[in-house]
Image (cartoon, rainbow, N blue to C red; front, side, top):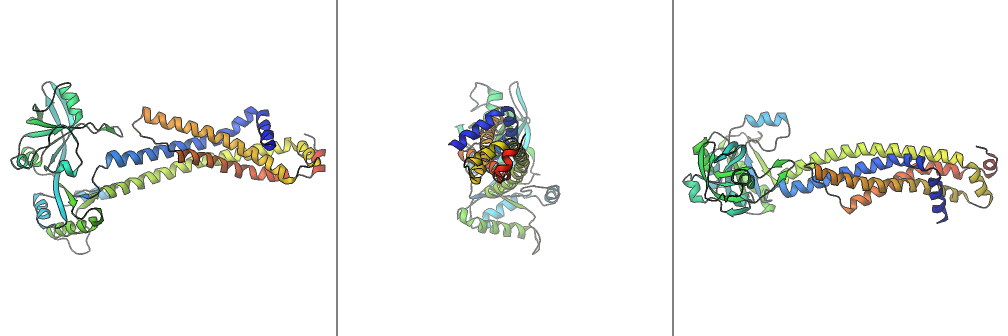
Length: 404
């Protein structure tokens, strides 16, 4: 306690210098907390809101997950997945418990005098309500019979209900989808925005209606639920792969002329992206901590010189070398600890501010706070070790003769 009291007194004697010394640690810890909270928030948000694909469902698609220009150019050259491919999977895949299909584009939607110009339009099979985790607020999804007869029916998102119908009940009313009348039979639950993109501005119609009305030139995305559950996903993918490769007469050893997308694959891609961003930001914040540590070392060396006579007097009345070393080490740790606490508080405020003002979710966990403070303490120990050793090695007689 005596050592701590002396350390606090030494810091209070030079308030401005102590504060300027803290800045490097404050900025470093603040950046660490902010970055960790943003990455953690995004990971949680992506898992809950974006990757809604069931873990036992995968998609056979022409494009798949595009991560580079080369991937895109290669995917463009592939043969489109069509109705015949879909039927082959339905007939010959023994591990496929449920097979659905989907087409997507963007079209204008109109009701009375209200119009939305860019609405995500999906033509799907009737079982997509199960395969794609679609939650209904009111009404129903279209049936297999309506799909077979290319019924002019639609299920709309909450965004269309708010923009086109305002306070009216949309169920039973007709909207114009790119000039074609569609009867609204269902309303999806409100999903909100995902990273600034509104997820409620969408409309679903039967895939047969989509192809009959807008053409069948687009490649179909085939949604497949595995009969064996998550553990049997690879076997189901291999069976679908065999079917599609045989239909395309793909030679042995050649790359698949199609791609598979699953919730696990999407998560893996996102984790790779976020891990790279996380490492980069930690490197940047680490530079701030290194600079802060160098500043603490420099200030502590100056303090050793200024307090040489004090060190000599303390040694003369019985203080041991390790007492002197502990004294300066505690001062460095106290500086870093104060900077760490302030940095953690500012980091939390910045994280909350980002979540409030920008479409970026953040998540601050107690482990993040503990990590920030531990990083500050480690910085203090490393920064104060050399000055503390130098102070402890001063010869008492020479220290008493020193004049500042």
